[in-house]
Image (cartoon, rainbow, N blue to C red; front, side, top):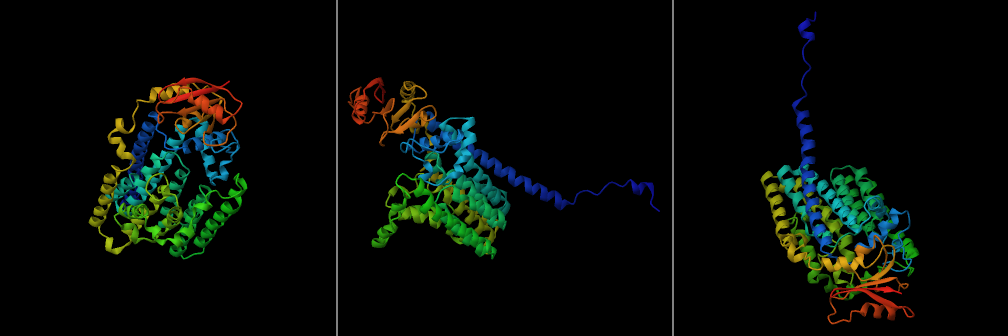
Length: 469
């Protein structure tokens, strides 16, 4: 017979293991979120200093801003900076950049793209750091997360300003983490989206598929490889030539296989060797102990086959897609290799990687934050603002790269190096041409566009602005 006291007995408490499990699933996410937030803050400070000091690395920010502007207004990406009527989907295949549209619609400014890129890279920091904490413990995981956030490939991408690879970096992080956690469907889906970021990433997807097939022992990885190769062929042989004004894949000539065969020693150019060594160094050599590192080969291959030295080194955005690969490979090696299965050794390797990243930062973009006045001078700000003020909204402008990213939001901008229709305004940076006549911009514009007349509306020692009459 049950007594009243027995019926009022309190419910048993949750098992200790369940409470520990709940705590373990929230704490890694909170820690990785903090690392990601700090990374976003540092990246954004750098971008803001760049923007405020009118530091523009190339015309790419202007190009992608014109693309975002068109997508935000539900138009195809016809980018006048590349040429009159130029569809940017004929340059590189990046339809996933349509996701920029809502951000640009809300904040129609080129700087918005820098914020979006910083956010996407910071998301990848959270993903990699979270996985590292789960696999290797809090301290080691956070050290690896910080090392990844400060890795030279990420810094170079931020310094180079917005490029399409901003979307590839988090997709790679999500895919590789899912692969290592044996969540094959998620890994497949995340990796499959890479083909819509840039055409060469189809070959990266091909290798990811092979690694998945080897680890999963299923045909799903082979299907992923087929997906990657299929899209690479489709984009380079059909889509890009169809949309490109030259009826060809614009970058095919840069894959100089014949040049490599005639001069194999070119593969060991100091810039190429340094890039490879630095990829190994930032993981303290751990990436060499995981098959995931094979995923870097397609990107390194097209870069090293090119005759353009800009692809060989560590500058610009080209190495950002390699960072999730080598760091996930390092985490894989630390968590799977028995010889590395020691808490102390893992902590040592994690702190080593973090210290290496901090030390190398002095040689890359974030090292400039130590002396903002030197690297982000503001003595030309007033001149830049005055030149911009001389150009009204809604007009057509031909310009060099100096201020184009500050004009694209409110005018139709053409690059001065192309064959363009006669613009209403011309703006050029003359700071590198001392002694130039104050009317040089107008005179040169009249020479480029016979039958027109331009008058100078602004001129100082740095900029000249001329208006067509």
